[in-house]
Length: 128
Image 1 (cartoon, rainbow, N blue to C red):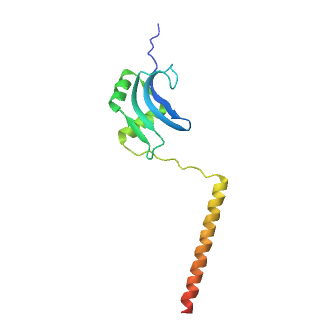
Image 2 (cartoon, rainbow, N blue to C red):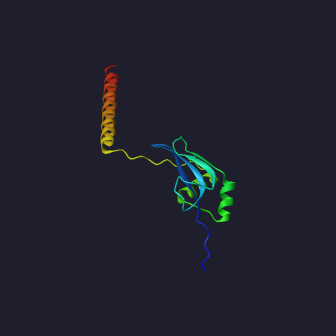
Image 3 (cartoon, one colour):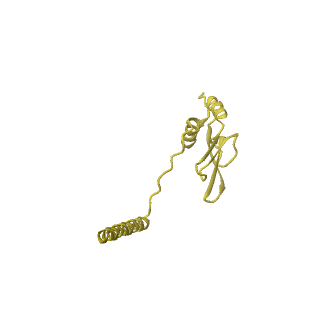
């Protein structure tokens, strides 16, 4: 007879409104739905605050890992950040093609204005 353990996972349960996520770090049976019944809440994660809020009870996490619970990739990353105290690295957002074109045009206009101002200044100093 094969010996098996319950698939207990430490994972994120999504809460909050539409487009405004807020996560609870929970210990749950792997067969339960993402936001379904859980065994224990061990932390919270809010990606909307600046800097992102990570509040995890590491003692409870260590107890559950010792019992055989497996953290998901996302939770493993959050636990690592909580242990080291390192700030969360913000991803750079890519500008759309329109936004890139606008930024390039604005930079070009600023450069032209700067050269025009420098030319006027040099003419004024020569006139004196």
